[in-house]
Amino acid sequence: MPKHGKKYMAAVAKTSDVARSAEDAVALVKSLAPAKFDETVELHVSTGADPRHAEQQIREVAPLPHGTGNVTRVMVFAEGEAARAAEAAGADYIADDEIIKKIENGWTDFDVSIATPDQMGKIGRLGRYLGRKGLMPNPRTGTVVQPDDIANAIDEVKKGRTEIRMDRDAIIHVRVGKVSFSEEQLLENLESVVSTIVRAKPSGLKGQLIKSATLTSTMGPPVRLEIDESGGTADQR
Image (cartoon, rainbow, N blue to C red; front, side, top):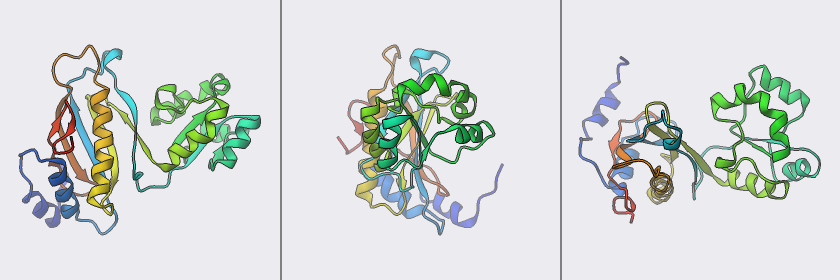
């Protein structure tokens, strides 16, 4: 088990098991971030869903009004006019035979991939490389789009959004911003993410979706967050 430093343990001493409102949690996470670099603020949600059942899987995309604080590198799988539109819209990479071969050799130096429907058959063989890293284009996440919509899709990704997906332990891990963000910016990003998770509750799930939630920075201690499934984070309804 990893040992924590004095700064971390001092920060832990200022937390408790009491679930806090969004405002209190955000303020505390910002104040307890111990690192000298700009830490990422993350939300971790334990759910009551069963990931073994396909109908209870959760995979959504939440817009982040203030972005993630990171530069998003976009790969586009398209040809012809769609490829030219993607390049004009600011895509970082347009896939060609050379790039596809690089991906097959393990290269994935991009954060999101977008494809037009006609390319899905051609890139199917890349599933083994892109799928395990969550980089395979998917209609459910808005990354398979018609050629006319490709510029808008790139613009949305560049402005800021985050993918919400449940792991094998039924836990959702998602970034909501940076410690350098203002409290208001983090609150608005957090509210968008929580609202998206609440709306994504599987119809066949009995009882509550959210069992517990914590907010934390990269190097800081977790702070319990109070979430009301009927309307989002506490005091943000």
